Image (cartoon, rainbow, N blue to C red):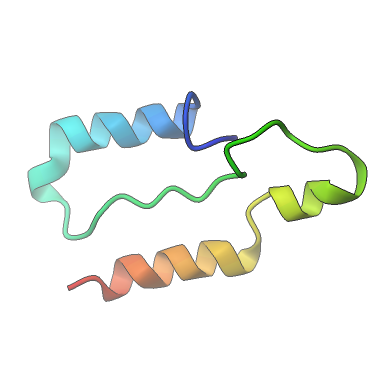
Length: 64
């Protein structure tokens, strides 16, 4: 899923609109790149990797 025009983007928007004052850190969205899903060997590069997910979680947890 892409960062824009997706279910994840809508969930992030709803949280930002309704619960922004209760958040301790900015919203992070880890998704595929904002482009058409590639075929064949590039699929693994397009999808969020463990490293990208870990990095986003770490940034959120370290936000101060």
